[in-house]
Length: 218
Image (tube, rainbow, N blue to C red; front, side, top):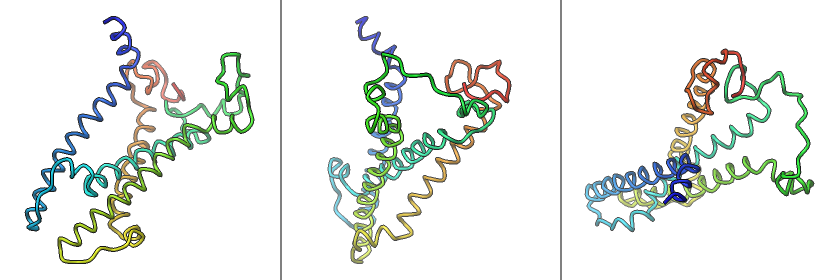
């Protein structure tokens, strides 16, 4: 029991995030399924099972068009914070220390750091590579799911399906993508600015409560 409590204590933040994720994803699937059944009924189409809905283009499109924007925002954020600054923000490095030389790696440094070369190159960029890789994967799944959903919608209206590439060029696909992308970058921009003036006691995403507004970093 104590070991379990220790694991919860040490990993509470990630467990809470993934817990909320599962709750909301299940809720989305249930609400989306009910909405899908209503649309099928309005078009006089036969209903499908809940399990079939989970592999349908309608559900896949809805899920991954949101995931792609999240991973795009995080990937670009990691990259941009490597060389851009915002004076006073807890989310930025201090521009006055931009030329500060990093300390040499110690004996407990990760193996790629000790090896150097190509291993070090990929390791020191691994976070942005992983996030942008997840963006590309989500983007492709959004495209595939959206194409299937669009095809189903076309057939419900007595029209023919279009090829995947043609769907990629439709305003519908880019409207779905861009409406999420712009909101993600807006939210992050607002957070960066608000972190200059506002505080949250105890959070590493905030500067210490007593820090002046022009103090940069955490």
